[in-house]
Length: 368
Ligand code: IPM
Ligand code: MG
Image (cartoon, rainbow, N blue to C red):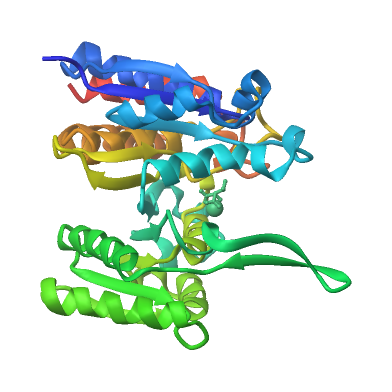
């Protein structure tokens, strides 16, 4: 048997630091759980631009398509702000998503008990929160044509196009319903059917998939602006939320902050299954490259570590091992381990990125 392959693209800013802790955890699984991976590292984003003049080299794209899973850190930074749009670090990430056809982006927002006080909302509103946003990731206004900045008369016009085909809506709806079957069986779909035709079609197709193939699912629809409001008013009313690319971008940041820190939240971007049954997949923390703290050993590696837990669950069918890692994270938080993002100014001295990695590895050891 050959080992499954992982392509690690640590990227920019705090990406390499947080990913450094993930590679220690990958090694731990090889040594202790008979779960070895063949790991390869490559560049993405600004780091790739600095070396190759492009945020994603074709060779890296080919490696990503061939790997069993891709782990990504973060892309971007102020150093690249003035680059031409076509070579901005973010374009590397968007190319990966598009060419791997990762249409279903799972963004869990879970509030750890130990951190409930940390949310900007009242504790009773967020304690025990566990929701999953399924964001469509390869279409919509992020990719629709026509797009660009054009001359029109004596001024310029900026154009992006919101575009969804029935099959694009159908497949992401199915992935949300499948997921809901393993959770509470409840899905809320969000769009703006009151003002957008693409929203009318979205609502229609999602309902049809439910009625035809998922009658056991309790499906509701909500306008996305109301959804944003409900997320901060009473987030526990939701279980699975399915929505388009742009609304999903915004709503998932909103949901993420309910949990207290962006430093805690993982994500999985999944495509259609390969012949071996494994979906094309990329795992990345929801947080960005945090250039203000990059290189200082302050960053919280938990979001990146929990992204690897999602890889164990969704790519490698190792749900028990994913739970082991999630429990280890929960334990170190319950024991009081805190990086700077999880502390107020008067809460004492935070631990470093590496110390958080140490604590999680110790909790993994203790789980054996
Ligand atoms: C995200 C990010 C990306 C997006 C950026 C970095 C291109 O905000 O993953 O949510 O807008 O999709
Ligand atoms: Mg975003």
